[in-house]
Length: 202
Length: 65
Figure 1 (tube, one colour):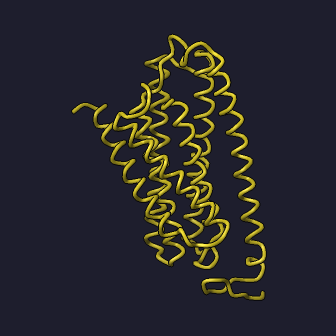
Figure 2 (figure 1 turned 180 degrees about the horizontal axis):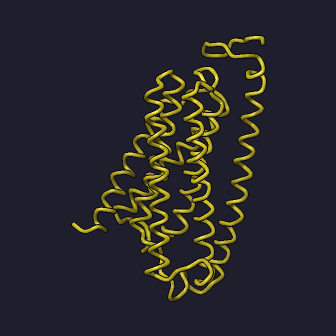
Figure 3 (figure 1 turned 90 degrees about the vertical axis):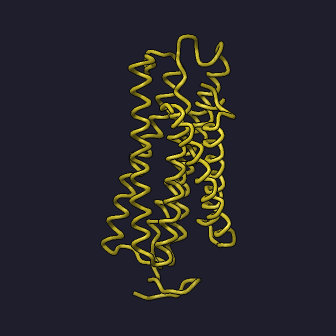
């Protein structure tokens, strides 16, 4: 297969060079479709919230803000470690890359554990549930659950990327999979900035 | 020191670390070209915003409980 030079030095096969931009655009379109999905739920929640009398409804407890802030900071921290994982891979520092990647996965698992604990607290102690607490419970569990599912998928995604890179699927000139993984993880972080703001701050 | 105070302190510390790291990465990547890097810059900016929100929430300046 023909080999071509890429900006910044290095060589990749021609097929990769020709299709990288297209695959990037395709992945960004996937993220845009996910933004549309989250936006529709978020705007529905905001509409319902502003059309009711008081928020949260009487008798429904808000989620604990301190735990929410810690959980948010853990997830945002995982975004930072993911960014440095990619940067280290680009510069050929594999051990540092692996360390940052594992840190990202651990932080993701910690976030999900924190969310699980929050669900447990709300359900058992505060009696807030998906179906029994009106629009607040339905919105909260649907949106945070959908986000949690994305984090869960992201953890598997990053684990597979790590295993692939250990087996030499990527090199420092050819790492689109890692770029896509980083974009996905940042997307999951950024969605949480919005969800954290609407559920805990306003 | 009870559990709630520890949670507040952890949120502030982690939030400040996230803001510093995100802004440092943003500064380093500021001149890198390419569509993916432009998206990364937006994401890092929003990540820094998230860190600010987490830190301010931990410090008790914003948020409702």
